[in-house]
Length: 485
Image 1: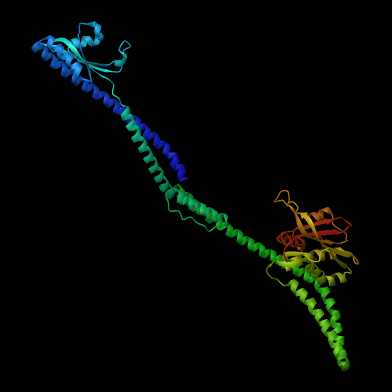
Image 2 (image 1 turned 180 degrees about the vertical axis):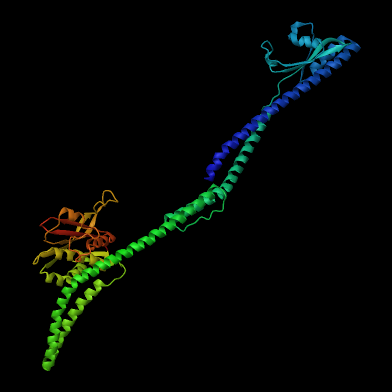
């Protein structure tokens, strides 16, 4: 930028130097002209006075002879005697009358009838007085001055001055521009890069009292406001995340409530077995070892059921890590087996993959799958079937309101949860993911299950879709990007 500034200023400086050189040449020419006129007039007056005195003392013949000798010995001037009564000498009438009255005349010869070698010569003519009478005139003529050498010297000096001035101006402009302009602009660029990298605490601390300093201070003020707004957004985001976690936890507890009755029934059978075997141990000590083994098996079975419930209900911060989607889905189905058995619903799981690696929070993903499968169990008639299918497909993320055209087609994992219940009408299907929307009686559902499921899937970089027709059941599809397990 400073180099551009120097190059922009340099032509103006060169024009000024060239104009100054031109004016100096014009002034020198005028001074030469004035000096030549003064010298020629002085010489003409001196010769005219000397010839007048010689005319008075020795006569006209001696004066003319002396004039001829002066003409022969002076190489700088052309000297000639002018007879004011002889018009053949080409003296203009106005000058002739002025000389006759005793006045000096001067002109530069530019007449067409003059000799070629006399054009441009300066003529200084002085009248010769003898005894107070004008007897003639002395014409002292000099060629125009040769200023070529002076012009060459002036051009050479001007060129050297221009080069030195240009180099000095460029150097000074670069130094001053680099300090006054380049340094603060570099600081602003560095600040802008830090802000682009996400550091809203970057400040330039301008000390200048000019426009760049004002720009830096305005930028700092803008960053102060942006940082305050970012803090507000960050706090609002944290509050939203906390609220979402509370909603998810509440929905998880609701699901636990649905499972509690089934689990209680499931625990009743092993508890009866444990009690019966304990009585047999008391009654028949010889079979005590066999009865004790059965008691241990049933206790481990109850412990496993309770641990699954506790793991599902436990609240912990999100933690994404490598997971096997096949094992995770199978664990959810195991957790829901009791609920499905009590409704006489068969859970069928089919995986086209031996392993499906994703990066996910296992608790959140289990909650999403649990919500879909529990809804499918509740939507099925007694003795029905819920099909859960896992496969790898190529799919493109559907278009959303915030984007145009959807995403690119990629390799993903797809989990289908299909029930064969009554299905949903188009109006209900359009609102199925709205928070707090439910078609169940008051007290049986919070209406958050599918909304929470959609949030969880979105946070994992996937998407969820629903399809349903009255009388033909409903199908929910979770699509998750592939990851490293």
